[in-house]
Length: 184
Image (cartoon, rainbow, N blue to C red):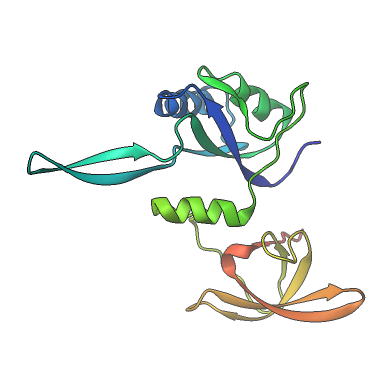
């Protein structure tokens, strides 16, 4: 089953080749025109300062040797490109036999990215006005649509009315938790 939403997946790589896999995959994304399906590749690492012989030394340490993260839309083509990138041994959460992997939960992604100081959410700011319909992409109402009843641009918070069991339910959420629904 193909997903139409971009999500984060964990790649299993040869240990010590995580950055090489990242470079290879980023190159393949461009050359194979997959920029609409594969968005970011991240190797979870942190800066660590150690003191040896009285000298302070800062090094980049890999948090999860043998693993990399990829943000992508799970289509057959994107799956094929990533899976066949040199150094990638497979996806974590794939059960073999051609089965598609399980994406990371949004909370897991937020936790990993915040440890590295990277935003897991969109980088561009969206304009949302009162009365617009939005698709909820994170939280307990993920996958549902709602109508914006008020927007606070300064705090990046929205009040959205969602229909649950036939009743309109007001809820507050972050701009990062919604996407605009395009009307034609």
